[in-house]
Length: 323
Image (tube, rainbow, N blue to C red):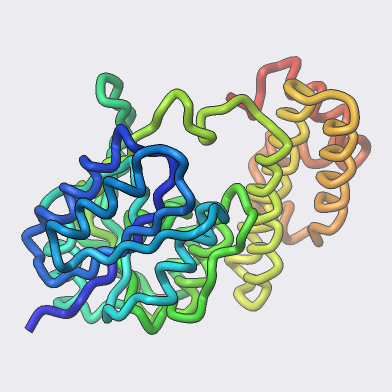
């Protein structure tokens, strides 16, 4: 008997893409699915589309709720899920018809708690570089996987992963955060014993021109830095991972400071500078950490200890460290 997979799909203002997403779920070769469509108070035709699909396929559950944001919608789906495994799919994306079959096979063979598949970014006409792993199957314990997250060998997103229910059943998404996946991913991995990656592409990440992910830098992006800051503190119990997380956070502080100087002004810029400096000053760097840095990293670090403002102006002038 196939294990039941709960698929949670938060939905808001995606009427042009929703059918494609749901169709890719309904067409899965792995049939034992509980598809939970969470209409997050969408003002367009999404509520009707959800209801129509609910009538067509008995595996589909539809939740209509007031708008609360992506995290709140995912949490609403988690409250009603009954599967032994859970997957989170964004409603403007779609998946390969054998994605869940591939991932469940890998989980069962390797007795894993979390499986991550490769993904492809596309806008339909424009394709970005595929996010593939080097090995067909990469098997990691908790510590190795946490290091892989910090080094971005495991993507800090939820939508290309399949989780054992026990790992995430009481792990809620933080409501109101811009980078909600980053606050969630490392905590889920820390609860798992074995994590695997498969190099097959199973997920298609659709990026739209009107998507918040593609917008010019705004103060909301600072949530990404807050997530890395929280993660650094969380990983203090793993010394080697902690060391890498601290180094990464230093240069992430510079990145956000530089971006703020380029795109923000007035109170927003001052608020960003203040918060970045607070985080930067709270990173406990010692001589052992610095020995691990490259020559360029050491130079930027020592200049930044004199003045973060000057360092970021200099980096912006050289076009260093930002897109």
